[in-house]
Length: 478
Picture (cartoon, rainbow, N blue to C red):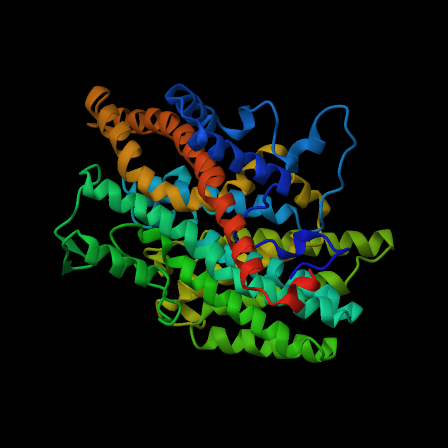
């Protein structure tokens, strides 16, 4: 539960964007109440039109941006606030991959394999659509953010506040993750029912029949943390396989926080490091990344850069080199990776199976996120207003882009192919560029509405439900 005197930021959910303050929530909910309480059809239409206006075009920005207006004092960013921007950029890259890889399947291969010599396939360049690497970054960031404030309290020995905050976060986690995901999948089900999305005869090689039973089966798979496979897919929203994985990883983090809260720092780091290696050894790369985030949070609290200028330059150089190496590994191709120049070495080192791709992407994610913790200049990039906006809508963008690709995106791409043409490289590329230019603003707009209409109310509901379920003693320590 919330403890008076401590910022609410400690309870923000990893993978999820930083949310506006309570006043902004009340304003959003009051708009809907006014809409449904008014007997005037004209008023209802006006409220709906007002809701459809993107948040960045509103006269009064959310409370989280209110201090950024000219003439107001600048607010010092929270120490982990830049990670909202990291999530935003990562979510955008996942969207770019899912939008690009069907018209351009070659993006799944690396530069230099056979006749794949496109500029966009080069290492580092391919980061702009390396969606699988971004999922790994999601998990590292989640482990970091979920444990960071608790690690601080371990060092201050504030165990009462630690356990109180942990129970609150644990209680709300499932609601906060699955409720918006269910809403997104329901939209996909409705589109399939109305014929807006074509229903295939087979899914994953098995006969498929669209209906309530299939939809309920999908929701069960989407929210199933007991199946340790990360290869889940389905017709309605296949990209949401990571939501159950995120929930499972969160529970592992919370369990470790409880179990290691009163241990010495050296013991805590040793146990976490051994567990991380154990997870990697058993192909549980996802859990290993959550634990890696915990380790990074501990190191962020413990370590400080040397004050000596020469030593500081050496440390910064090593950190930047680590980030560059991480970005290179994050470009590890999905197809033909051990035959791709620059990555052939991975054939001769562990792991020797197809698991190698997930392993090296995980290592790359750790090497990218870790150094950021100690590089304020890199953090500042993710604190710019456009990137912070992406951070706020990141979860919504992750949830809605799959359906958008199959509806509006598909319609625009097919229309450009019909009008401009797709025979030959240049007409094909021009059609893709024009459709992308038209489609991206639509996805951002839809994500903005989903964020305000589903994501924020889901957070409100989780906190309201927690309050209703709390005992009198628990409410007394809020």
